[in-house]
Length: 76
Image (cartoon, rainbow, N blue to C red; front, side, top):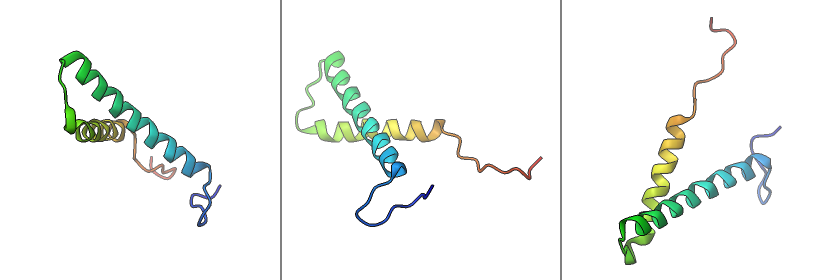
């Protein structure tokens, strides 16, 4: 399967990446909601920045947990 898509087209790899991004944003939003709910903190105008920060943290943790070592069949 092709890993790159043509202009104005999206393949299944693109949709998978979009889906992962959506899940990261949703996790950041949920964490912000829980922050306001549990901490009784009104973030007010800072809410978009807090959502961004939580989303960034979720993405960093996801990357940290993922194995990025190249697969090599010649290494023994």
